[in-house]
Amino acid sequence: MSNLKIQIQQLAESYFEEIRSIRRHLHTHPELSFEEYNTAAFIAEKLTEFGIPFTPNIAKTGIVGIISGKEKGKTIALRADMDALPITEANDIDYKSQNAGVMHACGHDVHTACLLGAAKILNTLKDSFSGTIKLIFQPSEERLPGGANEMIKAGVLQNPQVDFMFGQHVFTPYKVGTLAFCPGKMMASTDELYITITGKGGHAAYPHQLIDPVVISAQIITALQQLVSRSTSPTEPAVVSIGKVIANGATNVIPDSVYMEGTLRAMHEDVRKMLQEKIKTTIHGIANAMGANAEVEIKIGYPSLINDIQLTERTITNAKEYLGKE
Image 1: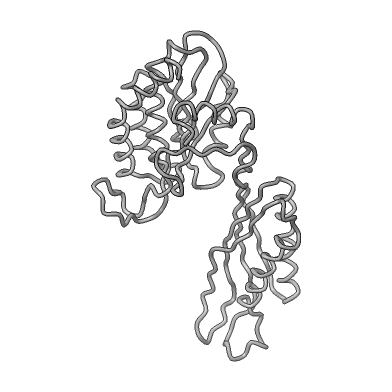
Image 2: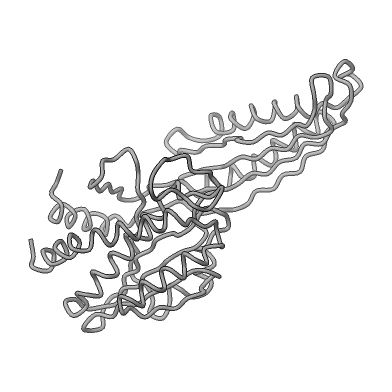
């Protein structure tokens, strides 16, 4: 192992308690997407303490720190998300969420703490490498269209232009201390589906006089599953799922409308676009055939995640040297 990697390892061990404390502070004080004001202020405080210059208020609550090496060179960006989820924490721990109905249930507190830890280590060693490190603290990963797009529009990848970007995500199937990598395509794109089926409600004993949006919605849900199994190749993974159905009827009342929400995931962009169109066509076709009206909104989300193969392989090699193959 090189001397620099030994130094990094020693610093990581010496900073461990501090970074764990940062993570627990963030876990105790979670904030929702684009509401990460206190989180951003805390990050700014830490960067100031570390002596790292930064620009705040990018895409509302985002922050970008800059670490300059001894000479000019490549620019590498390290990215972490900051937002939490609208979930009530049930864990009985000392650092349980103090914000009612909000919880760091997806690990963004860990990501932010890790990036602050990396920032402190790299800033300590900045005279040992050339180039620039951009520290990107991103708001609103959880809510589309997301903070990443807004930060990119604000020019976060420019001045200096980013050559490579690294991100990470905690993943519970793996033991603590394990690093997992995936060269090439890794994560699917994500789009959100919002559907309203409007028919004619009334007494459930007289369905022949009505246009039942519940039955129509059931047919639509089934048909959407068939889109994937009959319109896409088994080698091109895709998923269409409906996760929310609201029909405000009763045991003897058929409602006027049904509201549904769902998600579309795809690994290939051409499959994604094809399914977007077929989802609309299928929903409108079934609704029209049954005499109902359909409103369909597809909110375009993140594209699929594709890791640079050569860079990932190089990172795997370095990780093996740093942590050991196991």
